[in-house]
Image 1 (cartoon, protein in one colour):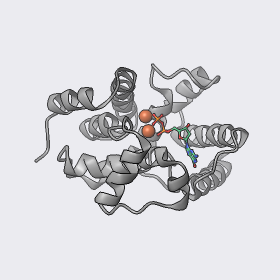
Image 2 (cartoon, rainbow, N blue to C red; image 1 turned 60 degrees about the vertical axis):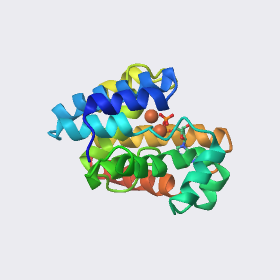
Image 3 (cartoon, rainbow, N blue to C red; image 1 turned 45 degrees about the horizontal axis):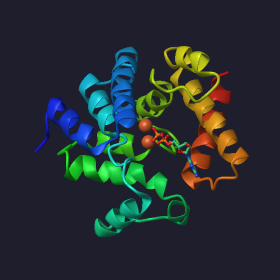
Length: 194
Ligand code: DGI
Ligand code: FE
Ligand code: FE
C-alpha cells in the first residue's frame, strides 16, 4: 500500500544520515517547483524527489547483497562502482518498501544518476533537482544552472551531463554506458533547437 508523505519522511529520516535527509527534502521541494513550471503532477514530483536517494546510505557490500537478494541485475560498471546501484535499488525499494505503485516514479528514481536518452519530464525534473537543490554546493556554476533550469530544461540536462562527464573524466572514473548515451542524445537534441 502507498505510504503517505509524512510517513515516508519519517522512515527516510531513520534510513538516511542527516545531510542526505536534508538533501532529500531539498530535491523534493525543488522538484515540486520545477513541476509547477513544467506542468507535471506535484505529488509525483514530491514522491520521486523524496525517494530518489532512499538506498544511498548503506555500505557498498550491503547494496550489492540486496541487489543479489532481490534479483536486480548488476552490470560490470556497477560492480566496480557499487554506489551507482543506489538508483536501481532505490527504485526497487520505492515499490516494495514504500508502496509506490507508479512506474513513472520508479523510472525517475532509476535514471536519476546516469540520466537516459529521451527522458520523460518527471525524469528530467528529478535529474535536474538533484543537481540544483539549495543545499548542493559542489559545482562552481550552480547559480547559472539554477536559473537555466526554469528557462530551458533540455539545455539544463545537457549542461549537467557535460559537467558531470568532465568531472568523471578528470577522476578517471568508469563511465556507465547509460551516462554516455544520455549525454550524446541531449547534446544532439539541444544542437537541433539552437
Ligand atoms: O546521489 P547523489 O549524490 O545525490 O547524486 P547522484 O545520484 O547523481 O550521484 C552523483 C555521483 O554519481 C556523482 O559523483 C557523479 C556520479 N556518476 C554519474 N554518472 C556516473 C557516475 N559515476 C561513475 N563512476 N560513472 C557514471 O557513469
Ligand atoms: Fe543519487
Ligand atoms: Fe540525490
